[in-house]
Amino acid sequence: MTGIELYDTLTGEIRPLEPREPGKVALYACGPTVYDHPHLGHARSALTYDVLRRYLEWRGLDVRHVANITDIDDNIINRARDEGRTESDVAVEWEAVYVDAMARLDVLDPHDRPRATEWVTEMVDFVGRIMDAGAAYTTGTGVYLRVGSVHGYGDLVHRGLDDLRASAGARVEVDEDKEDPLDFALWKAAKPDEPSWPSPWGPGRPGWHIECVAMSLGILGDDFDIHGGGNDLVFPHHTNERAEALAVGRPFARHWVHNAMLNIEGTKMSKSLGNYRTVVEMLDEHPLNGRAFRLLVLQTHYRKAMEVNPELMASARSAVQRLDALARRSSTSAAAGDDLDETAVKAFNSAMDDDLGTPQGVAVMFDTLHRANAALDRGAEEAPSLTATAISLAGALGLSVDEGDGGTDADSAVEELVARRQAAREAKDWAAADALRDELAALGVVVEDTPAGPIWRRQ
RNA sequence: GCGCCGGUGCCCGAGCGGACCAAGGGAACGGCCUGCAAAGCCGUAAAGCCGCGGGUUCAAAUCCCGCCCGGCGCUCCA
Image 1 (cartoon, protein in one colour):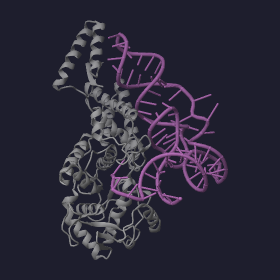
Image 2 (tube, helix red, strand yellow):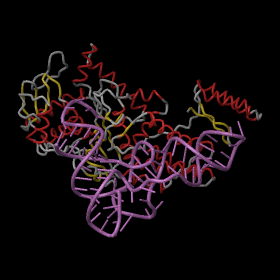
Image 3 (cartoon, rainbow, N blue to C red):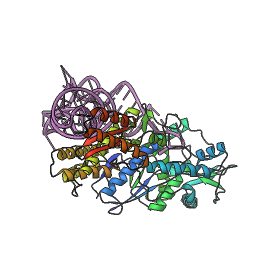
Image 4 (cartoon, protein in one colour):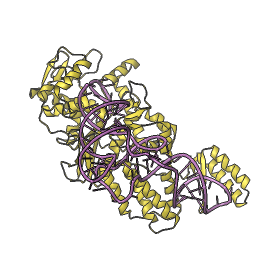
């Protein structure tokens, strides 16, 4: 027992998180297919599992976090063809962009970041076992899993086979070679000019779903604890992954976690709709945006659709600055205390234990921040402890604080203006001081006069 | 159509049977502080009742039923 509860998509209810091995949590989160700019939706997803991981660690659990990179699929092949270069070139380029963007969002590196192309041998092996189990068959176009042979195939989506078939027949082009329209490809036979790998069924490439089964089970082992991803993956991706594991009788994820989508103007951000914003674009727009976006993600429960727009980003930036302001205050006054405020930590933990209640966790953090400021104002002895607590809670959520002290060469000009303004103030030449402050404001710099002297920060 | 998740203040967003019937953030207003600011603090802003209509209960934003509206999935997708 961890005391932590999480919603489980499979059972449809909030259940206690019970790791297969006490004190350890094996987490597999589905990562992106790398062929284009990562968008804000990818960021929300990565942030969700980063926060989950950080919180589990904050509670003393030993987490093994795996997040894959899909570096071979139709989209990559098409992109490579369009640009006249290799699939590998495309994947390597966009994987680097993705990894860099995540780092800028303060997303911790997963312990393992397996690439699909490096696991093809294991995938072929896995497909072979499914064949051995009699749950798959070959056609001219590849190897297919016989969905009807898997008991409880649609359990994750809470739908029956007939129900699923009704939709499939209407929506998906029916492949005459398949026994059942729901059957899906485990292995795709090679087409001309496409990358391929050898297999007992001829050269080809792996189907999408097989990679995650091979990698999650391969790295984390049977019966690993949490499998996460965007809720758009529930079907068919996760449903099919699960079917593959079930087909060979291997215990799969104990707990299924899915984050909701991110909306722009009320509708899902997606490639096909062309209404997406890239992470890099958002990050480049304002130095505070990385943390502001994380805060926005935290302030909406992970299972609820969240909206992003410029106004919300601006308000989140303001909120982030309150954290920095506290850090500046404490660094200019008392040193941070060591002991955390127990009441606040308890409130925080109980909020987070309840299906990762980050909105309330954030509320506790800000509430503590407020109490810290008030204590600082009246010089109360609990001030250092409260300050340390607020900053620690922020840290548990992955929100770093920036005390905003200058230092780079670009700042020397600012430093000089600040010094000149201070000199004017000491001479009580208010007009000159105010003019200098305006100059600084034009540079996007805000000066604050404190008992310990002026400090400044970028707006 | 079927499945899942929702509809709470000016905006975002918690709360999911009773502790102050509504946390926290943003925006707004008044005061303190300041040379003036900024930051911070103190306080305020009629949520006519938490989408609508019924019901259950001593008690509902919170449970049940129906309806309306929104998002996502059923197609590559985080």
